[in-house]
Length: 202
Image (cartoon, rainbow, N blue to C red; front, side):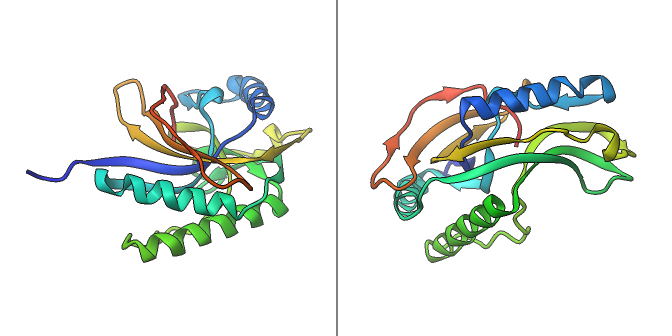
């Protein structure tokens, strides 16, 4: 029998207040773009590592890794600020919300430590460079965008205090996320989850 594989990811979760700020940011820009699939703001996160094919027997290993990483990392401040696009302003496919440089450096360090630990467990190295951001929407066709016309005039300060490990199941309505494990920063141990939610968008 072939081994069952999943899509999965590890992410930093945002506070409800930060989610409210993201919701308002999306609402204020809906009329600027057509043919855009907006991310449900209640389902956003900051992805640290994505797994396209994840075997079921590795779940406990990742839970242990997540608890270890979280236990040696203190909660840290983060500011949501500035809008940008991928891959370029001439042919934009993704609209994203930026993160301040200090928090981005902490997140890059977390992602690098995570990558190193995954290597010891036999996972292939992620070749894409890490860039901390929050995806707001995806354009169905490439668009030329003058980001200055939709740029934020405000920012929002919050605190990152937990990491989570999710299973991602694709459905016609979008991905559905199940929390496999959640761990608070600065605390040993973590919660094992079976919670399923309609989180959409990676």
